[in-house]
Image 1: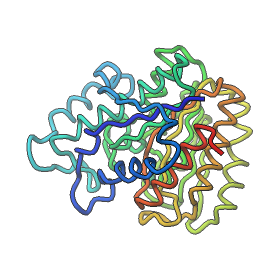
Image 2: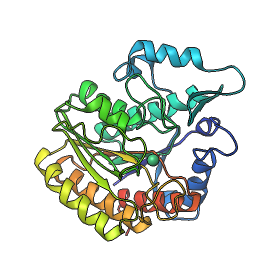
Image 3: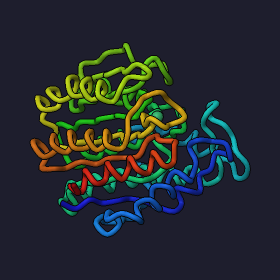
Length: 308
Ligand SMILES: [Zn+2]
């Protein structure tokens, strides 16, 4: 088993302001934590390149891509929604994060690595086809899915989103696309307050009430997802890995800990082992308590790299 770890220093140049929770320190906290673990020598460290314009157009309309290009300021910041700001380094970071997802799919599909984790920002799962929101500009995981389906010719791809917020952007893009099964757990009722009841057959929603215990969370997820994933037989497992369901996270009220993210990872790698020749690509979404985030990502990576 080889696990690729994608990261690029320029993803830390996107900075939405001193008090903003989606901050550059999220990446440095993860990387410095990994430095003290055996993961450091185990992972295959890769520096991504920017996604191409054609690749972006597999998910986002040309008009939207152009609009973002035109909005990016040459100095200072502008807000595209109340939570999401652009500054001169934003789109470079976003294109690197998206590019890493596409390259991760390519490497896993070619067998160069078994699976991959993209440690980049800005995140992507709130970005709809034509709308940036919730700290997101390009939908990284949907771009990964389209690469697998349209370029590599896969017929069935699973997207699993365990961020504490519902991935409204991913739902917007993939609902009704029978080549994709999306399984998603999220605190409910909660941000972004959309796409929960708009049911397409390929979207499995697992809403979780605030303060639900980790034991109950595990039960709900396993009951809702496992048989659907096994029946679907995905040829690739994609993961929107948000760690803001952590007990310590300041943005939400779930009670997960690093060991629960390890449990989730083991569930997903077992599905990938059964149907996808172990192929799995995971991408960082949320997670705002720096220590909780770093410990949870390490637990996730230990699962991907099969370290007990
Ligand atoms: Zn989130």
